Length: 494
Image (tube, rainbow, N blue to C red; front, top):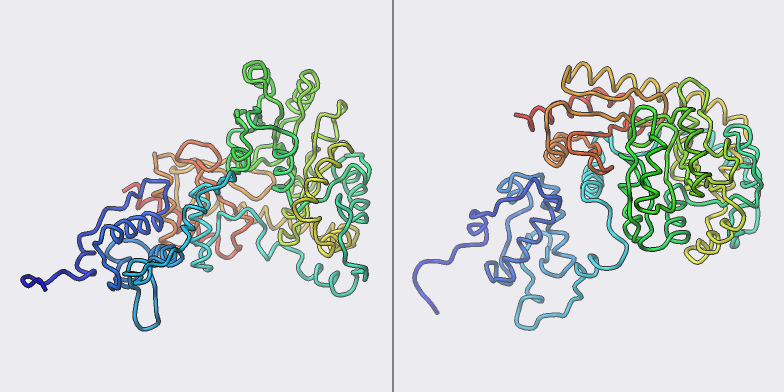
């Protein structure tokens, strides 16, 4: 036995801490977990040694306790740490002891595969919301509960759903819903189609996934808006696609930019959100719509029109769809129930040539044998009901009110420090912070104050842009949420 000076405890060793890189795209909890794993592997924390409590380590590192909770949880899942009630968290004696167990390295598996994970900022936001449900949410791209027709949907589900055999349905989707959509699309979107040319999906993202996986090949070049919601979806990179950008101003993209992209990169498809674009709220002007369809027809380029927000037009008149003016058959049209009623039902649709619908429905059947019939029944009943139009009117009015509340709070809290585009529909306010600011630092400062937003860099913009989704935040929380955002911004700038 070696005598002399006593060996330092693990808590004392923690006092000589490493510096966290708060500018890194790697989440803080992951930095902590990786550093601890390395220190344990090097023997700085022997098997069985007691680690500091989550709260104590959080104080020492200057982070939220929830960040350390995630780091410890990550290491427990790998068998590196073990926790027992009343005994604290210790370095595992089985993994690092005399007779180690050969636990699979799940961390390596999680980092493998060809399907890429979500951007780090989105994962950080999701983790923050899971750990603290009271967080004021200006990040989630969905309707708050107060905007959904909950009572009407409850009535439909309790009184109006027909009993039927609940086996696998038609791979294109529930036939009565497709029939209902034929009428809905004709009346409200000016689109004339047939049930055989409609594919029911679980929402816009599944529609985009099917398109990128089945209609395009690795190495293909596609055009997306800049900034763009598509940029935040790793499914494009996972499919091996090359993304080229079309800058967006207040009137949408400049269609003539397509010529250069087509001749230089041989783009094969265009992905657009022309009505109240996500994230900018821009509305493609009538002149640019006409020019875009002309160029697409001239070049033989398909356009994927993602149109989730058109029914939210605050003036009560939805902007026309590109598909309604499509004479060359260039447009694949995507719609969703999520942004006008309830995202939890997971009902969306695609209008495409019958051959494309057959191809994609076959692929979707390989994935899940089709969607649940019940939410499709609910959506069909709701679209056909007397509840639909009154709900849409209320939705527009409440969204306009929430937009105005958000803008008024920004004017009050941050005069001269932030600019925004004034949307006339949709759920989002696209803002530019006048002083230069680091996205990661601003997001962390907001999380510490109980508020989240999406940094503009998630959508391909330079640092200093933010998307504030007033459609998700509860109305009564909007002023406080913006106040917390303002306090976070000032703390970062100082």
